Image (cartoon, rainbow, N blue to C red; front, side, top):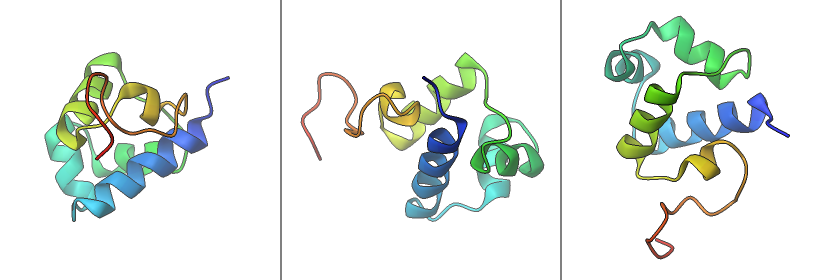
Length: 80
């Protein structure tokens, strides 16, 4: 079952590990910083297009962001 809190926690961890502020991620996704905060708190999710952008930007799999695996490596890549 999809857990918004897992998605939010992983998104926040990836953003912070990349040294990004919420407003920087918001600009990348063409949304508001408030929307980024809502996603990180598990209050909301995002579109498929933005999920793709997040995976590409942070070089992680969608399965990782969605909580289906603990391995962040995109399919076809070995663990980092």
